[in-house]
Each structure stands twice: as C-alpha cells, then as structure tokens.
Image: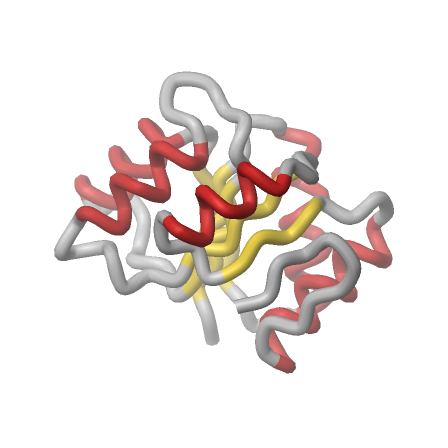
Length: 137
C-alpha cells in the first residue's frame, strides 16, 4: 500500500486524480493539499502521513509548485520524498527548473480520464515511463 499526495488548487483536478488513482491502484491511499502552504501545514503538523510519492501542480496560489518543490528539497525531513510535477504547462523552462530543483519527473496533465488512469498506472506499476512531452528521469 502506497500513500500518494496530490497537490493542486483545482477541486475538479483533485477529484479526477483521486478517481484515476483508485482505478490505477485500488490499494493506494490518496491525500491532497490545495497549495504549498497547505502541503507544509499538513506535513509539518502531522495532519497528513508522510507520502511515498507527491504529484504536484505548478500553478497554485499562496505557494506555487516550483516554490513548494524547492522548499521540500531543502527540508531534511522531506527531501527524500519523490515528487512528480503534474501540470498543464508544456513550457520547457518549467520542466528544466523542476528537474533541476529535484523533481524526479514532469508530466503534462492528460486530456481525458482514461489517459490519466493509464499514466498513473504506468508510473506506479512500471516505473516512470514517459511519452511525448513528458520529461524522463
């Protein structure tokens, strides 16, 4: 059983990801945060179990994904948690910054539910297998 933390301010994206994760791995535990501030509040106060993997959006209020990633990787307590950036942005600059800041991968949000399920399943069960615009390890 794995604990997956999804960080995204869009409630529709949270629900879609939660459903897709359940399809991809029915044993996975889903946790969520709405932005970097919420993420650190939950991690630092113990309101959230330490996740095995974090999927994080870039564009969020208060503390965006890139700022959150950098903060995670500066933390002795949380720097070993693998982070996959999960964003609608196809910017090569965003991808470069995220990978240089410690993300283990960068995945553009797929367009439909079946693609989301397939991508999550691939990441969880087969390692980080990327296609098209996704940046490999």
